[in-house]
Length: 276
Image (cartoon, rainbow, N blue to C red; front, side, top):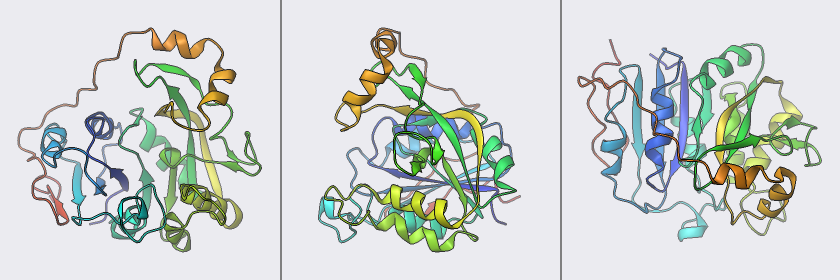
């Protein structure tokens, strides 16, 4: 039976993966959720996934694809997208759900993110939420992003933009868009703009809808070329958030009968309590 929604998560197996997965486990949507984790080039041990999945609730399936090599030119592979190679497109095709959302391993979601997105996408081909900017050290919210990821024809970019972490689309209606996860924008020397290619095609060819509410916690990266510009727009909010105490990690209700995901180098799932 297909899941209500699939979540695609490219990862380098960083420690932040645990918080990202926990935010999925704590979603208020209690229908079936399939999580597809794609490992490009691991920075950490693959056994981290067992620990991350300890609190997996029975309505969530976690599956891992680790081919054993990178599919990105960044790490010696063939895929031109430097931010994950072909993993996003491959996992989108593999997803056993019509509706597909995306979450990077260093960000996380509000507990109502998926329920809100599923509600608005019923009348559209794709949907998006807004996001909060989060301080990289304290992990405290700085402010709502009011400049960048605002949807079509809004914000500082010429035609608008939506952060992949804020995006969901109907993969059957938008099947032709999936390939663009592999294709950066023409002339982009960084080869990090496949997400903008996906957005451009969704905007031009399909009907979108928004929740109108922030539900994505996006952690800022000081190395991002946009970081200096963001600091100017935030004023003193960045420093204020940086001085706050780190929040406690989200705690999911632990179901001891739901086994952790095991086995790597292949696609696998922890299905014991999800196929009933």
